[in-house]
Image (tube, rainbow, N blue to C red):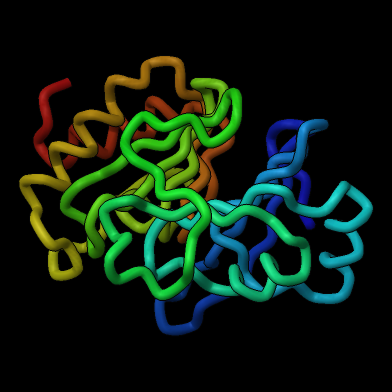
Length: 203
């Protein structure tokens, strides 16, 4: 796994040829039990690395399109599985915890429920108020800039813009780690602000 912008964060990726961008997974290493977000399949090297870092205690899935390899990893590690409460009735994987807006996954990690994306109540995760992990709604198909999911994929564009406007209230953001595309390790809030400006949101 690749070390990210903090000593306790790691990630692994898989290049998706159809979308011409990486899909990403995030690991937060913590003494009280590690957290993984949207896990992709692990190669042998990454699986050994994960084990050396303490395995997984909590596994968060941001939306039903990001279940990825969660079932296999949960079975392998015994991790508790968390999913978006708005999808509880039709989620493709059983979850131990259904996260509502503002729920604390573990101390320091808060779930935000976003509207207007491909799936109801897609989750974003706010770590220590400075790092935002997103699912599908906010992505980065090119380096250095964030984008919103294309209009054709949105269930409600106005609601999606409202969700982005809500993220713009997170003034302490330093990094944005999209599930799809390039991470923004520095200037995350500015990158969100630039996206909002391009979409006509008030600055």
